Amino acid sequence: MSAPLVPSPLDYIGRRQFAFYPPVGNIAPNEWVLGKSSWGEVQVVNAQTGSVVWIPRQYIGAVSDANAEILVVGLTKELAFRAGTIEPRVKRVIEIPHPADPLPKPFDLTPERSPGPAEVIGIRVENREDSPMNKALLTFGFCALIVSLIAALLALFNSCAPSHSRRGENHLPASSIKSRIFFAAASC
Image 1 (tube, rainbow, N blue to C red):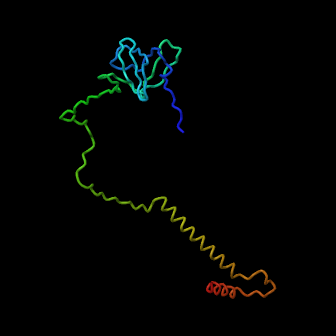
Image 2: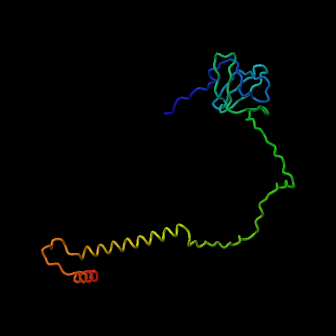
Image 3: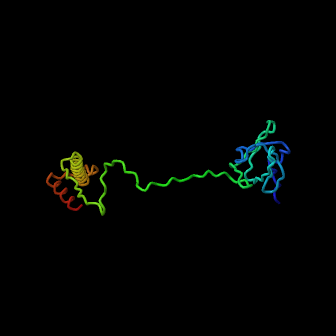
């Protein structure tokens, strides 16, 4: 079911005089009285001259407070009266033709680019063997190598050394320990 139609603010004016804001162009006195109305248009009569004008409802806006001396009816667009009809006022802009000779360019310090592909410039990365970063990386790498070798030797000696559980056994002379370490390293 469709909703009931909402009455226009103009329906509450009655026979009171009102003024349009912004005023309709090309009609001198801005004092109007409401005439007939239809679905798409409202007839207004100029109070002083008696001229009749039909205004489309799409251009009618809000109505001011009823306690004022004269009511003000807002228009959504500026309107103008032309050839017996109301039309939106169009501010026309006349384009100025461009001069035949373009204006000289301001002084520019950038050189003009030559046509064609850009020149190839060889970029060479300098070899800096004496840089502090290279020295630090070499020192760190050398120290890491030494520490890893020492750790490997200690692990080898710990795996080949006699265990503490064999205390009661006879200890072998130093030459046999050296041969055991050699064979343990060879077998690993």
